[in-house]
Image (cartoon, rainbow, N blue to C red; front, side, top):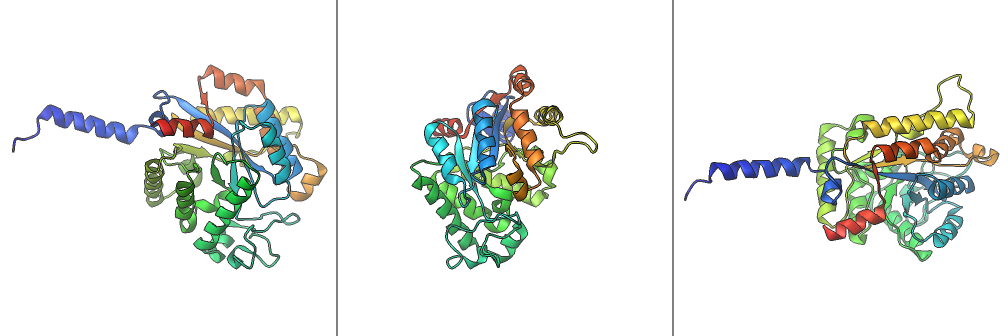
Length: 329
């Protein structure tokens, strides 16, 4: 047998290096080296205030994606909006926790069907750790499917699935989350690429980083689009101590934080998570996060942030576009 020519070895090495460094954005047909972003609003359906903030951010702001917490009480109002705006990029914020003290929700499958999902009040557990301790993977998968079924019961199809409080990123549940997405042909929130921002923010160990890449490859092989990176740090961006919480200060501060985040993001497909809420005294009875969430909303409405995105040539996309591109690749 003749030996492989040296030039062919060099070509194979170059192709291999390209395969390792090519972002999922490039695989989906976006220009090489470009930053491609989804500005995503979590927690729609949780409250009237959450819905109002999401609708405003989607209709008047830079936000272009939203996900709905299907076990919560204000879901029908959000679907009224979606039916009036059928092109909205709207998915399911798969909720397996109920974290607040004075406002709770339970699993759609019921506590008799999935006792491991329920606390002593009959609500979902307060924390991710409690879900991991008590719930089985089978119970979690059943609840995921029930939340998808309720969404479809409103006559619409979700553009994607994501995970409230990141519960489904836990190793115990991750493969069930991916499995349902692949079976249902619904894209899932998952950073299968370089994952630079989320690794830096979460101190993901090397063993988990390798698992992340492997799951990303599985999702891609199943015909789904895959993200390169995720950032969810905006929930922790709070005004410096002593700064009055005026709308002007909130907007200025949060807008600059988003600009700094966009500067630090690497080329590829990045999913930026926020919580746009129009808080009221009633919302303050649910959570003390009203000002943080209002800051997200004000930033998305800020012309300065939109101007920065346009000046830098950052591409803003949606799950709908990603799935359309994936079908062609």
